[in-house]
Image: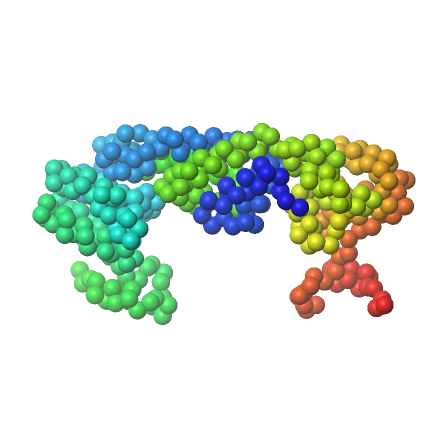
Length: 199
Length: 199
């Protein structure tokens, strides 16, 4: 027995979501059709509206439907510190930590020449202009601690060095609650090299 | 920092999906907005179309956008055997097993008086009429092996007894691959009581 065409279309469409396989997609489709048609309509509406109206903040390139995002508009933020991250989720994670009050620039990815993602795709000229023309005292590179994230960070150092005095990289090391026994060697290497003196 | 209103609306809407919490909903929303807007539009369209057009098969009450589902239309199916299940997913699971070729009736739930789900909500009159007027030689009750499923099965036995000669219940027992050591007592009880002679 095959699902009817519309149900099949719905199940297939759910497959575009991260972490959703054939079984979960079927479960989601039947759940909505059997028990929550209003939820289905709301989700349909939210998807259409968001995919049509959400664009990028003109200053930091985070996802928003406004010209400028909350953070870039806020008068409370320190505009002399600029933190460069890969994705909007990274901004959200850093904001949740509560330990940063400066501004952001979101690359929306990392350099990946093989996938055709170069400086232009990451809008690095916008970043360069911001660092060049705004009065920025520190650029914090908070790209991921992956090969691509590191490579992107190194590229950014070279690109931004002429325009600012201070470029920093977030610390890599043992996460809080982490037991040394279970931490990989490269992380331990970073933790040792990045050791700080008690004051 | 709060998500922009449209992104927040999208994240909240994803929460109606089974097994999707705050974190997954955020991941899904950002994934679609950052990397797969076409997928988002397709999903939006599929959701709207399915939630508006998918109804119930007039014969077996499974979900379909047609008057009659594939199974009820198929000339290959045995119309003298009727299997009663709780949900369309159950039909799908039985069809996958490949060991049933009769027709179905889908209750779309189980009796649950406390939640206001009685015989009328499960369209039991349609079922009664089918058993009464069609030439059905066996009704197989394949509701879940839960308290509600068992109660529903017992209710159906009483209701259908006057109209058919043979009403059966699917076997409960040790699942294939199951080790007796890890099977609960009630299941083992069923397995023992339902034992069959070697032929």
